Image (cartoon, rainbow, N blue to C red; front, top):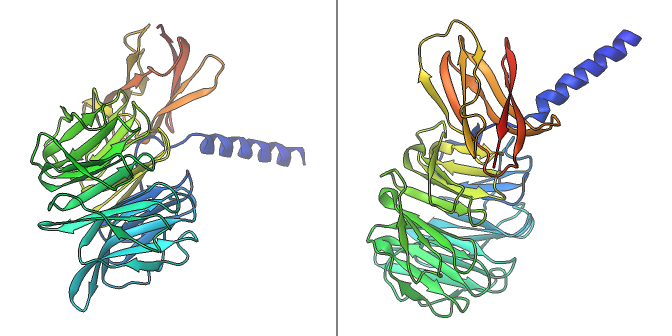
Length: 419
């Protein structure tokens, strides 16, 4: 009996350890579809929605472990945008085919997607949606030389058309409050309102490249992305837009900021860019795919999801993790964890390691009390020599430990952060 109890305790302990380490980086999830996904919206760490072509509306209630298809009530529809203000109230916009004619469509749910009601069908493609609360929201779109801006103040029971002042098709919309909102579109179009959409003022973007997505942190500070690696930033509500260096010529399709410093962009060829200093620097993250990524959503600095072509859904719980760089493909003689360099360090340091065989590998940072600080690496890695950078900008000075875990090797070393 005593052996049974000890065995149970040991089993429970190892299960606890296995489940206490969150996966690092961007993890691919099973969407259950091969269609093109265009938009994603996370409500919280468990509940999220993704939409795409072929009448596809997907929902998860367990952080993306499972994605379930919902009945849209439409046929021959492609969905492009999704916005939820809470677990129950959400809106999806897209393109309907009715009697071989293409028209815009708005679907609304008030029960978490159990039922979707078709609300409005203007004769334009609808591409972007943003709701401020359960009642007030905006939809944008257009077609060739036509533009559409629609507003509701009663949850979509009525949609009122607003004058855009442009003929350019509009792709993305965001509001930070009931008054301040921004729309972007083709030919470098940026429109701004400070009175709840009653009037829209054209702003100078400095480009004629198509702009696909916009994200504002507050009424003044915002970011816009678009074709050919375009990133624009404003700190004065769009009076001036300043180009930033993205490091890519790929089209950038969606941007999401969590606060003044932390933002993520997704784009063509599986590109994911991350900034932790308000766009001063953008770092490429490993997506694990070359599929075009079209939508991204974050609920905080760490928890986010991205969607894209051919049913691709990616999930992160650590802000996208870090990039593990292979510095040699020669097979090492054995496992080895090197001392970090520099040490002491401020604010970042490199951790190098050798692995002689394909391994499921983790590197975890602990503080002086043995509390887990961050899972730096958690993935299958082939034989070779590697290095990874730990950016400790957000952590206090002190002694830290880093430990490598594989099936056949563990090792721990200490390091000192001095600020």
